[in-house]
Amino acid sequence: MRAWRIGGAAAAPLAEEGAEAAALWGAGATAVWIDGADLVAYFPDDVRGAPPGDGRWEEVPDVDHVAAYLAGLAPVDAGAVVVAPTHCQAVLRAGQQVVWLDPGTAFGTGHHESTRLALEALGGLPLAGRRVLDVGAGSGLLAIAADKLGAADALGIDIDADTVPVARANAVRNRSRARFLEGGFGDVSLEPVDVLVANLYAELHVAWLAAYAALAVVGGDLLLSGILDPRHELVRDAVDLLEAAAGVSGPRLTWVDARRDGAWWLVHLRRTA
Ligand SMILES: C[S@@+](CC[C@H](N)C(=O)[O-])C[C@H]1O[C@@H](n2cnc3c(N)ncnc32)[C@H](O)[C@@H]1O
Image (cartoon, rainbow, N blue to C red; front, side):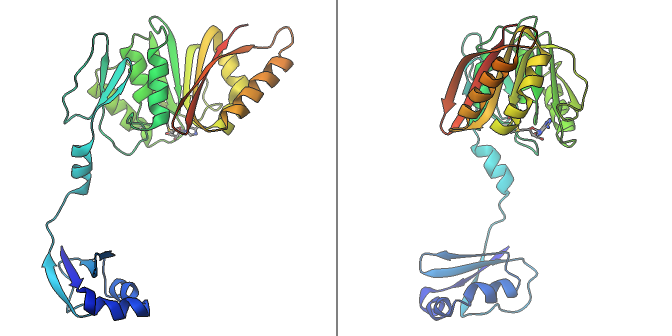
């Protein structure tokens, strides 16, 4: 790749006309930006002739930006689980489990607050012998983590078909028994679960609260993440409404706690009847 650098003095009149970027884009630039007093545009190697403006060519080393991004990623310590990119060494404290995971096309590396909150909350629950459902599994990280933490069964579902092979490959890489199915919550038939974890968003949790509660066994835990501040109040209102409508036979939920990381909340509920 080559860069066409127009020195400050030469760039100034162009900038005043506001035509500099348009002219360079028009000549086939793939990126245009101001570098100090200079105007710089990237062009592919095969561009013909000199681009507009009184510039000079510079050779630009080819950089694999994806590789550079990956190399800069560090492991995430999320309580009982450390999520580590495969190029890293993971240093574990006693009792911690590692999930090896490289960023790919599916959401969920542990770097986002909502995922980290869900991992920490999973790590704080007794999981041994319990069945875990991960709604909106993305990369599969939460289901894989639940399996590593001793769950009897960990199933992830995702409405986005493209995520399912990614999650399955991540499970294989981690020697995890976590299973993944394509399907939207409410569309796929699901067995009762002891723990339901879902990193989605507040409005969806509100819409599905009764269905979550019905799917959980009595004593089951719901970990609802992806809730932007202050929308956890919507979830609290929905829990109150469900309780008011529960009567003698409906599922009842109790509010265990809500945790915050930056602008994100996780709400922990438990089915009590
Ligand atoms: C924010 S990502 C969470 C990924 C991962 N569980 C994590 O915590 O990092 C949300 C995922 O939910 C999926 N999703 C959205 N709506 C859904 C639905 N109705 N049923 C199942 N999955 C859904 C999306 O495709 C996406 O992969």
